[in-house]
Image (cartoon, rainbow, N blue to C red; front, side, top):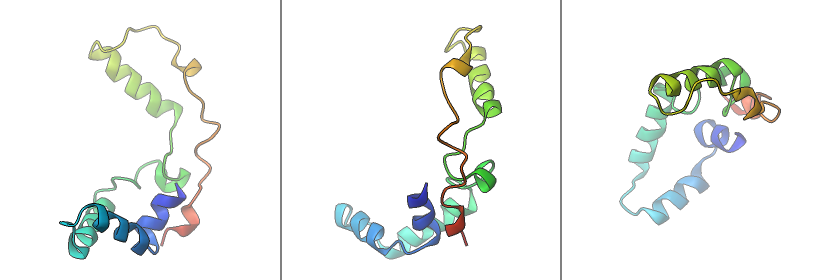
Length: 100
């Protein structure tokens, strides 16, 4: 999470240099535009992440996803999904102090 906050809101020069090294067609202007769009549309930092930190997950969000997968017949109904995950390592607000 801290990496995303540093990239979006801090000094991202080293990361951008790596991007341009691996993708010579990428320009500083394109990267700046992309970061602006990521912020504008909340691709990494919106919703629950605004209070809980990037990577936030909640029981309600996981249940909503599961319910959609059941409705789409991707997975069967009746699974106790709470046994398939833990929130113990998320929602700690890691990196929020880096957001400007």
